[in-house]
Structures are given as structure tokens and as C-alpha cells.
Image 1 (cartoon, rainbow, N blue to C red):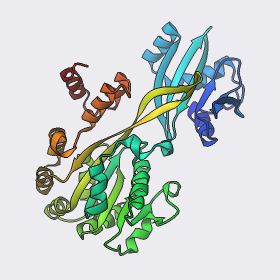
Image 2: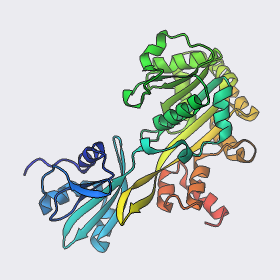
Image 3: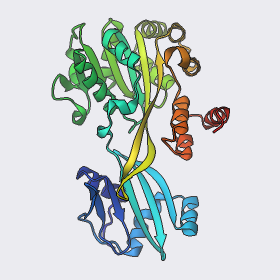
Image 4: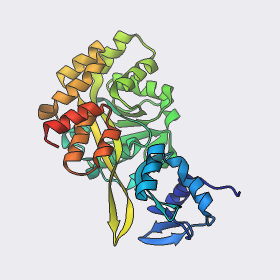
Amino acid sequence: MKDIPSLAALALEAKNKGARALRVFPGEATQYLVNNSWKPIQAPLFSAVERQSLLLPLLNHEERQTLEESGVVEKFIRHTSLLARVMFVLRNEEWGAQLSWQNEKELRLADWSVPPFLIEKLQRQNGFNLIFGPPLSGKSSLRRLLMDKLTEMKRDCVLYCDQPEFSRDDFSFPAASLLGTNLPLHSLLFVDSDQEEVQRKALQLAFEGNSVVLAMRSRSLPTALFRLLKVAQTDDEIFWASISESFVSALGVRLVPGLESSVGGAATGARLQPTFELLVDTPEAKDCLRQGTVFRLVEIMSKGGDTSGMRTLNQALLQLLIKRRIELRVGFDESPKPQELDHLLRDVGV
């Protein structure tokens, strides 16, 4: 049998050509959707056996049973730089699939619904800000949009970044070059790096009174803070006191699968729905940081929404469900605490 590329590899090839969707159906050449028009992609015409081998690994046992019974199964897959909705079909014992996606670079700041008071903090308040999330969560995308907005507001911004594809043409530098930099106090420093020595330098600059926004990989705020404690290589008490004194905000971001959009009956992509949890520098939050009791921060976020605009990830997912921006199963898949989300839904009668 000839070598068969993975479905994700075909989708990434199509995405790199500007496509919004890909389909592999029986008796057809593999096609991708560009400008609302389906075009053949340079890929082999798969036999029924090859097509099944291509699609079967993406389904678990329960999903395969559902496909055999109903003929259709939908799910989302994450792979490298791809978050895609996949519709699997089984007709006359032949397998097929259609994938659709959205490029996170197409998102606007308005799509994130970042509260204006947070933009104001970044513009005027010195100190330490954190943007965290797992891979494919939109950290770099949001960072880029915040930089653009603040630059429009005449705030001097400088970027040190690991990934050149996300760098701006002006005032952006390789992350490692931060190590020998003395930042002017009037500049807002954005650091998008997973290098520990770069993160350590960013912390040092924030503790010295500079304005810093650090983007890093982490699924939760407590995990991110404990990782920074290790990175700082200093006494625990000194670290927590410094974080407490310099802390301004922490954004935990996610890109979750939204509802499918279409034009003229053709799928135009699985919409990415941005959302976030937020902690800001209330006296209670800063006191919690000073004591190093970081697991209490989630409780502080959950109770601070009415007065400070803070919210947990579950509260953010709840709002998306109420507004019918995402499907119920997506909400539970993305929730860090599904039982808590279930209680929140019951409280509002959903």
C-alpha cells in the first residue's frame, strides 16, 4: 500500500494555502475550501480501505459504534497548530470526512471581550501581568491584539518573542536578547517565551517597577505561579512578597470550539470562541499572593465578578453556554471542573 498522509497533515497543508475546510469523500479527489469554492488538492485519490485507515484512528470505540449506527459523527481534533471540527460520514459502508477550522490570527480584540478597565490598567499601571494557557489557547494572538490596541493609545510597547511568526515588524526582538536589555521605565514590555532565563529576567524587571506582560504555557494560575517560583531562583518568602507587590493582572485564556458557520450552504470554518478567566490586583488577591496560598485565588476570582470584573474559567464557559456560543458538550470538555460547571448551569436553570 502506498504511503498515506495523516488527515491532520492534509488539513495543515490546506490551511497553509489559505483554506477554511477540507473534505475526503468516496469517489472524489481530496478538496479544500478557498473563497467559498471547493478546489482539488494535490493528494492521492484514496481507495475505500485507505480512506478508512486515514479516518479510523481519530475515533474511539464509542464514536465508531455511533458512526455505524447513525452514519454521522462530529467531533473536534487538536493537532499542532490546528483546531478543527470533523464530520465523519459512513455511506454504503464507505468512510468520508469533512474538516473545518478558523485561523486564530483572524480574531479581533472585540472577539475576546477584554474589559476596558484591563486595557486601562495596562496603559497606566506599572507592574506584573500574566497571560497563561495551554498550547493553542490564543496567548500569542491576544498578546498581539493588546499590543496593537495599546500602541494606538500611544503606549510605548516592546516585544521579546520566541516565535518569529508572531512578531511585529516594529519594536520586536528575539526573546533571548532580553537578557542584556535595560528597559526604559516608560515602555510596556511584552515577553512571549518559554525560556526560563527569559522569564526570570521578565520577573526581575517587573519586581524593579517596570511594566511587564509575560505570556507562558500553563493550564492553571496556581501551576503558572509555582512554575515562576521555581524560575525565580530566590527565597520563597521574597518571591511571594515581590509578586504581591508588583501584581496587576492574570488572564487565563482559551480558544474553544464554537458553533459552525456557513455561507451559501458551505461550511466556512469551525469558529474559534475566545474566552478567559481573570484575576486582578484586589487587596484580597494581593494578600493571598503574599502568603503564597495561591489555590485560594480561584475562589477569589469566583466571588469578585460583581465588584472587580474577575471570573473563573467555569464562569466564562457558563456565559458562552447561556449565549449559545458553544455546544453543551464542548463546555464540559473544556471545563477544569465539570461538576462545578454542572452546578452553575443548574443554578441558572440551563
